[in-house]
Amino acid sequence: MPGNRRHIPEAVKQQWVTMSTLMSSREIAQATGTSHRTVNRVLRLSRLTGSVVKKPCTASGRPRTLTAHDVQYLLSCIRHSPDIYLSELQYHLEKTRGVYVSTCTIQRTLW
Image (cartoon, rainbow, N blue to C red):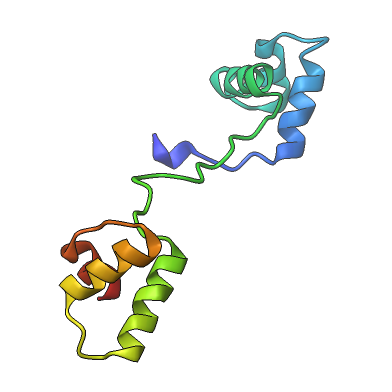
């Protein structure tokens, strides 16, 4: 139930790990007024990762085809020749940067 969620500070979770050397997870839950399941999750995460907080996912989704340098190259081509076609940009990008992408990718990137 989303209404029952509350933030538990990292320091408190760390205390639970310390307490777990002397107490069971049920005893920790009773003493702290937290659910047994929450205490178990924190203790399990601590055992598996050595940390009491989850690491955020940094890379989600498909990796980008064009790097920031590739985009800068395309923009400089457009600055140099404003009436350049997408197919010409595609050709120059492949010959100069060694990156082949579709004209649709170039269009979406520059949009």
